[in-house]
Amino acid sequence: MRSRGFTLVEMAVTLAVLALLLMMAMPSIGTWMSNTRIRNTAEALQSGLQAARLEAVRRNESVSFYLLSLTSPSTMDDSCALSASGASWAINTSSPAGKCKSGSVLASRAAGDAGGSVRVSAGHSSDNTNKTTVGDSATTVTFNSFGRVSNIDAAINRLRVTGPADDVNYVDLMLIVDSGGSVRMCDPRASIADTDPRKC
Image (tube, rainbow, N blue to C red):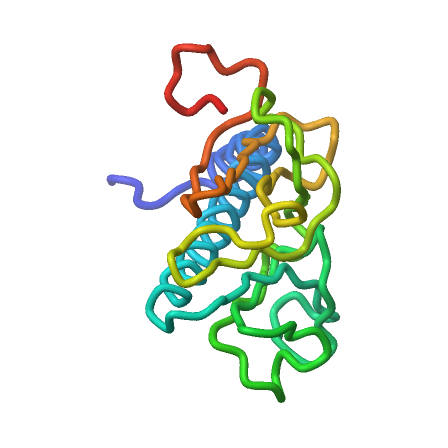
């Protein structure tokens, strides 16, 4: 007679091997998920900056991009406060702090599941030769009706997004806003070759 199915020993060995493979893959899966959140957050911040610039040109008035911290990273509510380390953002003609939900905000985005999984550092640096440092903390960048940065001495011109732990080799991304209003994403890590177009 032909035997059908698996024996109990075969099933136990298969499960043991599968469990071992999963245990070996877990650290890299966790890092991969964090890297995905870092990239998604950087792209969302870049989209927000570009949307603020376009809105300023469309309205023919100054429009600002504000970085925010929220009590719950997935809910845009009136607990919002300006923060140089927040992954959430809002676009408006005046500060939305304390009124992100009840006020009339032009556009906003909560950090979502990336709220505790990424670190954002925003700042203003006048050193144009070093694109890897954030500089002094900043929370706002204002675009004028021509799409140029109008608060040039205190505007966000560096935004760095990386992972939550210092001992893990995450993707590291930097957004650079120039005085003309354009936004560029690059990689500030020293391990990136000078000839690589991703390098800051």
